[in-house]
Length: 265
Length: 92
Ligand SMILES: Nc1nc2c(ncn2[C@@H]2O[C@H](COP(=O)(O)OP(=O)(O)OP(=O)(O)O)[C@@H](O)[C@H]2O)c(=O)[nH]1
Ligand SMILES: [Mg+2]
Image (cartoon, rainbow over all chains, first blue to last red; front, side, top):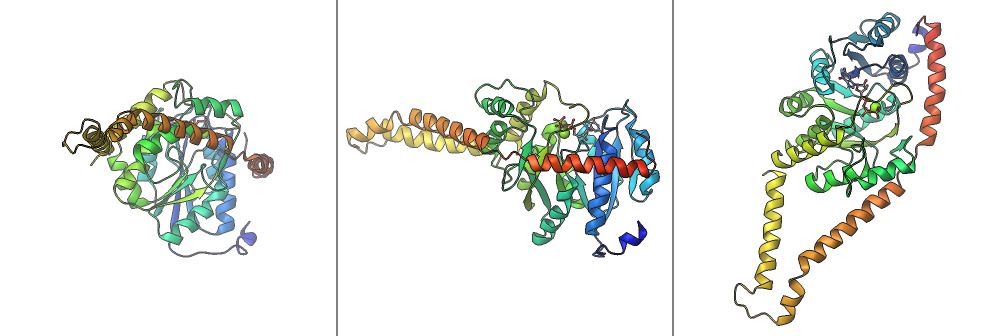
């Protein structure tokens, strides 16, 4: 490993990237996502750390994380577990407190966000000194895998019959939000993003919503505060292992969140 | 100004213009045809916005990228990762 490292570019810009990985029952996915992160950060030569925030997963995710820490080192893998499931929004806040990088990357640990895009995020950020860079499924080469036409159609119906579950990632829901809020970013509910740490801190302070709507609120507030947003097309591959944690009341919270943002931003 | 206010502002502006023409509030003695065209306007707008929404969402669903290669690439990398991690001593 050490001999291979020398052939990689060594970038000493003083920038450090902290990747926040919130996990809940991701025993199978966590080693794979970590392996991919190490691979792509290694190849691109950026300085990084991975912060795993596990919420007491009953499947033993934390135990796997500890093994990974032994393999890759305590400077690369940081464990910041919490005793019980306290939700995604607070997991980011908790992880951020322990981050030592000046940039923070937020992504899902379920392999739907591929680490190969991170070097692109970083280049994009440098290109325009953006305050945040957001992955988008709705532009350029972006897209999804694992949604069949039926699923897409159900999602599409939402505009008129708001009945389907997991509509948040949908075209319909995204369109509605675009119309109502005009946020200046094409993928509002995606959660694969790179932030300047200071920017994330100031955004988090202002964001009130929980869970899913949190992502949306972050980007809407970013626009409100005149932060600059860069976008990178990403492919989104639906999770292979494990279960989705989002249930039926997703719709209710989405609509509530949307209306709240509508009235307050 | 919040988005809600922006929308209320926009809607009332359009509404006021509409009422102005339809009911000739300023006594401009506009030709009858103006009023006839103006009064069903809100309905037309609503319907065309509905059609626009349908078309946009429909078009985007139809042209949504299916990232098959991404899924295949990921599957291969998963295999590679599992092997490498086993070698490094990870017990799954
Ligand atoms: N720490 C922590 N992580 C969570 C919690 N809920 C979800 N996660 C993690 O957050 C990420 C996103 O959650 P997912 O369940 O994949 O949500 P999703 O991507 O909208 O749904 P899928 O369609 O299943 O992919 C995953 O890495 C989860 O393990 C939580 O309460 N606490
Ligand atoms: Mg997911």
